[in-house]
Length: 591
Image 1 (cartoon, rainbow, N blue to C red):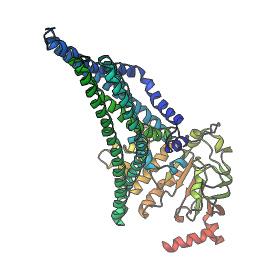
Image 2 (cartoon, rainbow, N blue to C red):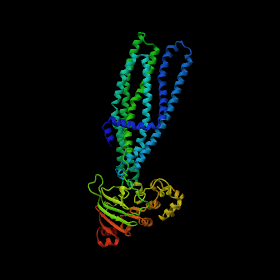
Image 3 (spheres, rainbow, N blue to C red):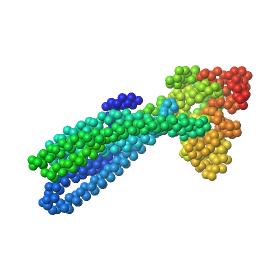
Image 4 (tube, helix red, strand yellow):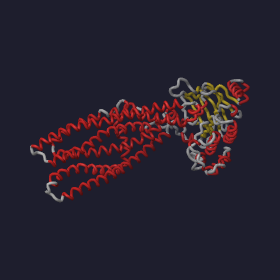
C-alpha cells in the first residue's frame, strides 16, 4: 500500500527503482534468450547507419564512373543489409515474445497462488473486478511493455548513437546544430510523461469498474429483467464507458502532442543544417556526397528519436500495471501460526470458550462472550434472528474468522495452535451457496480427493445423496459436464451434489449452513433425507432458519445479539416459552 500511495503522488525514485528491479529481475531467469535477442537487435540497429554511409561513395564515386564495380556491389550491399536486418529483427522479436510469454506465465502463476492463499476477510474486502483486471489486463501489460521497452531502448539508442557518429564524421559543425535541438525535443516530451502516468492509473481503475459492472449485469440478469433495472444498469455502464473514452482521449491527446512538438524542433534543426550546409558547399568545404550522406543519416535519426520519446508512455503504462500486479503478489497470505498437527480422525469435541468478536470497522461486537460445548457425535443446531452471530460463530472453527478474544478448541486443542491443513482436513461444509466447478459430476463430487476417490465410491456417495437415479438418467452419466456453477441443475440437485462431495471427504466434523433454506418442500425433504445419512456418526453444527429442520437436534442453541440466550432440546425450549418458542410460533403461523 505504501508504494501505491507514493506512486499516486507522482512516484518516488526508490519506488520506481524497485518496480524496474522486480520487472527486469524476472527477465533474468531467461537471460540467455534475452542476451541473444539483444545481440540480434544490435546487429539490426547496425544495418541502419550503414545504409546512410553508402550514400557518400555512391554519389561521389559511383555516378562519376571512378569505380565501375559499384554498379553491382552497392545494389548487392543494399539487398544484403536489408536481408540481414529482416532476419535479425525476426529472430529478436521471436525470442522476446518467448521471454514475455514465459514471464507472463510466471506472474499469473504467482498471482493465482497468492489469490488462493488470501484469507476469508481479504476476499470480502477485495474488489472482484479489480482482481480479474489484474489477471486479464495488468499482467499482460507488464510483460508486453517490458519487452517493448527493452527492445526500443537498446535498438533505437544504438541506432541514434551510430547515426550521430556518422553525422560527426560527415560534418561536426552540422552535427552540433542537431545536438543542440535534440535535447530540447526530449525535454519537451518529458512534460507529458507525468500526465500519462496519472491517466494510465485512472484507466486501470476504471477498467476494473467496467469489469464489475459487466459481471453484475451477467450474474444479475434475472433480477434486472424482473425489477426493470435496464435503465439503471445502462446508466452505470454508460458512465463507466464514457469515463474510459475520456481517459483514452486524454492519453491519445498527450501521446499525439509529443510527435508534432518534437517534429517542430527537428524542423528547426533541419532548416539550420541546410543553411549551414549551403554555406559550406559554396566555400568548397562540403561535397554533394557528404551532404547527401549527412541528410540521409539525419533523416533516419528522427524516427528512432521519436520512438525513444514515445517509449516513455510505454514505461508509464508498464510501471502502473506493475504496481497493480505486485500489490496482489505482495499481499500477505492467510496467517497460519499453528504448529500442532491434529491426529486424524479427531473425536470431534468442540468447545467455544468466552468467544468474542468484532469485525474491523464495526461499532459493535457480533459475538459476545459465547461459551458452548459440542460433544463428539452430537448434533447442535444454532438458531436465532438474522445477524445474531450464528454464521460468524461457526466460521471460527475452520479459522475463516479469528475471534477477537476467547478460544475455540477441537479435542482440547486451540484451533489457533493447529495447522490450517490438518484443521480443515477434519471439516466438511454444506451451505446454501453451493459452489460447483466447471467439469463433470464425478470431478465435482470427488473434488479435492479425486486422486483417492474411485468411480464406485463416487457412485455410492451419489446414491447416499439420493442423486444416483438422476445421474444415471443423463446421457453421459457421471461424466456429464455441469457447466458454470452447475447452472443447468436445480437447487436441490446442486445441494445433493454438495452432500455427496461431503460424503466423499468423510470428515468427522460437519457444518451445515442453511443447507435447505432456498429449497421448496419436496426438494427440502429429499435433501434432508440425504443430510440425515451424512450426519450419522459425525459432530454436526447446523445453522437453520427453518426450525422444522432442527427439531431432532440433540441440542438447540438460541443466539440473540451475539449471545447465547437459550439452549436445550426442542420440547424443552417450547416449554420455556422464550425466544425459541416465539420464533417457532411465528414460523408455524407463516407456514
